[in-house]
Image (cartoon, rainbow, N blue to C red; front, side, top):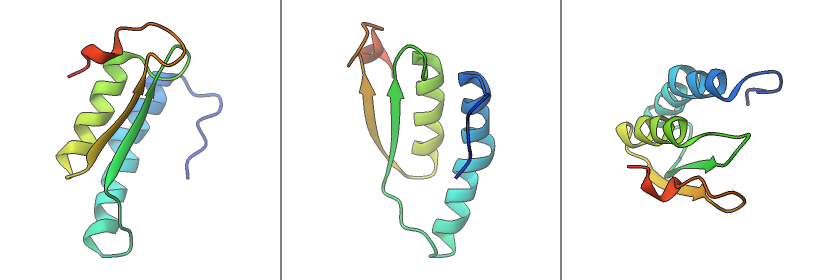
Length: 82
């Protein structure tokens, strides 16, 4: 697992999309990993709505179902993420 300490949310988003999701897909194709869902926490200080949308879209592209957490602590209008 990658350590995101010291990274901005945007840097973490890029690492997830560029490195982690493709690696997950490779491991799934090799039958070394079974993953059904991608989960994002859309909150202030974590991922904003645009970053959350990009991460979820990348997960959908490899066939994952979406789990989404937003507006649990702050009103960010995250229900509008599509």
